[in-house]
Length: 233
Image 1 (tube, rainbow, N blue to C red):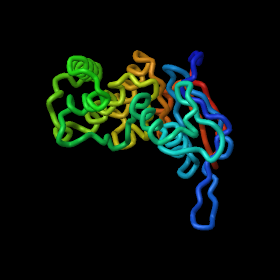
Image 2: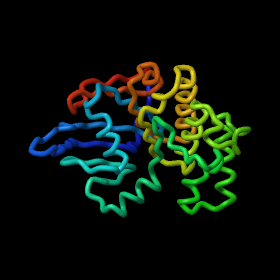
Image 3: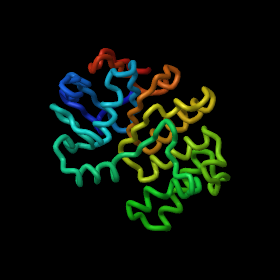
Image 4: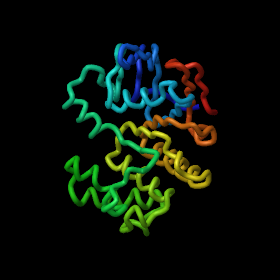
């Protein structure tokens, strides 16, 4: 059982309503959730249930219609765009289904890039990028570009990139959705091991029950509400 003594993510009575022409669509209807430091939370549900909306709100990419979104103790619900940019840059790592690596950069350069943007010194960037590539088993592939790597290897680079700045929060949107089951399990195991080692909180959207079983908790959402919460023992 995971100890959730320090919440990195907290949603408090969050609603989100979109307007489509003259129609109002209630994407989220009073969602409450928490995720503690070093915890992995999987969000599951059918298409249109609100999974991606939650991820967008936690990722500071959208704002709630009502309620509060707390990230690392800060209420981001009404922050200015510049402040939200700081949160995204400093506190959140992202992992996407289709990797989103920059094709002209090597694996090493892709992992280094977020640190370069954040102004981390060259010596520290080099040490951290090599450390992470070693941890994801790609030290010997550091100077290969994405088109020279398999899908599983590209996603392992993406995991390393997401963790490069030691963010308190990592968001993963279907991180194994484009991989076969063996590669997916390898990526998920690496992500879990690194998150625990780095004490990063991971909130993951997935359709895959096998991958979700590696999380600490599973939240099942339907029609904009969390219907069930299962703690993995």
